[in-house]
Image (cartoon, rainbow, N blue to C red; front, side):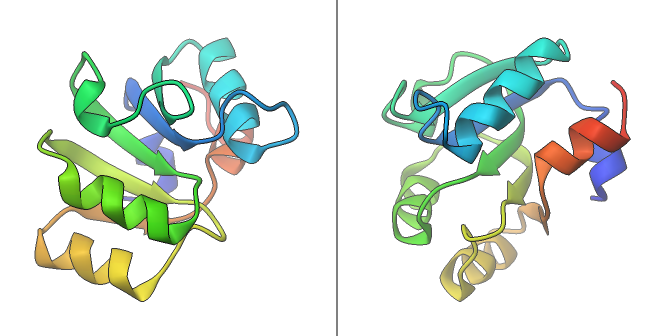
Length: 118
């Protein structure tokens, strides 16, 4: 899925440190909330993707790849697409997503927020 299509979806989960203002996960969360998206956060706010109480359109990985792959492996929820932020990628994550036929793209939601309006 391309970034313009991702930004037309509604329900986002940001995986990373969304409580510290200097972190990209925080900036992404704030940008999504301000733009009117439904947002949940895993890492510092929720401990598991499985704790999200709505259907997930987009899972945004903005976290150390070692932690990200573990969260993906324990997940039981359906996800339409995964966005892998720069620095959150790994061969293991890409292989896992391909093997499990989960759509993904390597990109940045901050760029998506600037380029595409909901």
